[in-house]
Length: 444
Ligand SMILES: Cc1ncc(COP(=O)(O)O)c(C=O)c1O
Image (cartoon, rainbow, N blue to C red):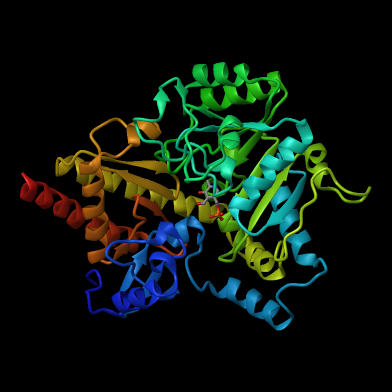
């Protein structure tokens, strides 16, 4: 159960990977020091590693696996589709089925377009807003992650030295080589600060195609947007003739009709991904009929042509449909109940052990912050070296006790989990918090 040793199968696989993949890695997010733990099998809410150790998985492929692993119903439809082909240069009925489900569940959506990832969904939503409005700029929240499209990445992880004033955040490149023009075309707004956001949006009125917003941005702290913040964005986009894009790539796992129903908003466009693929690669952009008409090829070249060799492939479509059909109101109630229980248990442990920190989030999403500051946004969630060290000890402490959570403290629950699993996770949290306290004593 302990972190794989230097002569483990995981260590050996990493050594082999180093020869062929940069840093032995394909996804920066899954890299872990000294080497990642290699997975070989998943079933329900558990994952087996290359050394045969089994852990409860609270990463769930970074929230995409809401039904855990190897769900028999999803597997059955995928196996059937495999027998009939995986992708064609022709459309299939499966894309209509999944589009119909999304349109019937999410009130703001009249039409849907499928992509292969959340990154592509956000990119196509931004491009659709540009095609519809004839404007180039977008606005996004500081610290919010929306995938790896250049424009969506701006100010994802600015350092204090570069992030500018609290009420007027600078637009900071995430990746080296980001063109300067990208930074000019992205207006960074502070989270949950309606007054500053409205002022900045008005400053660029006439140039802004859209405001891109995740109502509970994970990388910016997993703090829910205030109703006032969302309302002010809704009102201001209307005032300046821009569109509102909701990024529900993660937040769609919060509610049967999407997170937008919690905030009672009807965005012009919504980006989806992760859970709607039932464990397979997917993304989707959906929205108002007149806006989505930019994709329509029936009258010649559309305003926004869009293809994708594997877009709407029937494996992702059928798996996604089965996963979403399984995700009924009862599933959400179950996830909400487990999420509330675990969040409360973690906070109780932190308080009892007097370790500065807090578990935040909503529904099946929990994020553990081990900082003494009151986390309200990206800046207050920003980790200094000591906070980052404590979180790393905490995450490794959980791994050593049979629980996988994301490096950044994100926990995503899945429907196969039950109260016993939540109790096991809670016990592991107790031990991991003790590890952090011991590590602090050792340092002092
Ligand atoms: C809010 C949000 N938007 C977009 C994306 C990008 O999705 P993908 O990784 O499928 O490209 C992610 C991925 O984690 C995300 O969390």
